[in-house]
Amino acid sequence: MSDAASGSQRSAPVLRRERTGIVALAVPNLDEPYFAELTTLLVRGADERGLSILIQHTEGDHEREVDIANGVGLPPTDGLIHIPRSLTVGDLTRRTSPGPLVLLGEHIQVSPFTHISIDNRAAAVTATEHLAAVGCSRIAFIGPRDERPSDAADQRYAGYRDVVARLGRSQAPELIGHVDAFTPEEGRRVMRRFLAEGVAVDGVVCSNDSVAFGVLAALHEAGRSVPHDVAVIGIDDVHAAQFSAPSLSSVAPDYDAIVRAAFTELERQIAAPPGADTPVRHVVVEATIVVRDSTTR
Image 1 (spheres, helix red, strand yellow):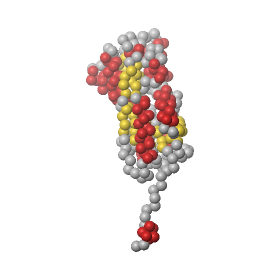
Image 2: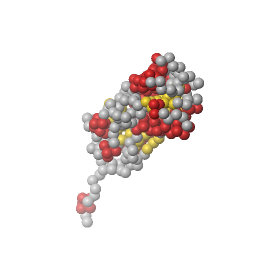
Image 3: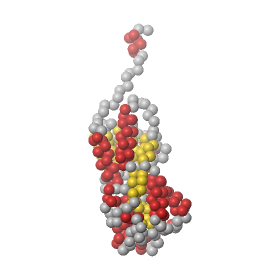
Image 4: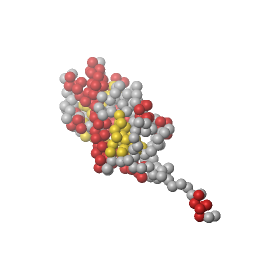
């Protein structure tokens, strides 16, 4: 066979996608301090790597999250960092615009995509054990959300239940405060209801710091001393936790590790040849307790 003939049988070269220097970031909202602070760190991390971040708000809306995962309305980008609230495995496997993707935060069960999170169950175990260690016997949990379930909140609730059962603390149903959103307003509403109904509580684990700020406000309004009457702890350790009155104990994710992992995993996918079978990685970042005045008895 001639060289010309053999050349006609060769495969066409695999073309690499042109780099844009832009990474899309899908975030539920920037009103929530955790998302705002994580977004700021991701923007800084991108800048250090010579990249730009294109921020897309989703408000946790399912259709909007799916559209962004499919690249609808987005300019060409090098990849997507997605903080989902309602995406499913089916949504992701049916992506019409596949490309580098890293999920942050909410865990999507058996996800075929790289995911980075803290161990939410372990974070709540740490928080609840801390309240038990400072003498709390009737520990409430404020944070399950029924209408739009959150895997992170569900895992944190499960960690709380593990500890109260193991340590023999009260498991009374009235100690569980369900919320419609993870906001200070909801934390205050639930704590006000506890107080109005005479629910005996001497410790509160909150599903995040924003809920905890509302709990602190309600206790202050009622003249209840924190931590002597009621000890309060949150999860996420947002910046404002240092400046609440009293300052809020919280379980702090390693934010720097989250940002490093996000860009490391995204760059690994970007660098892979088109069509390569890139391994899926699930990265669990450490979280440690930060004890402040709200639990220091």
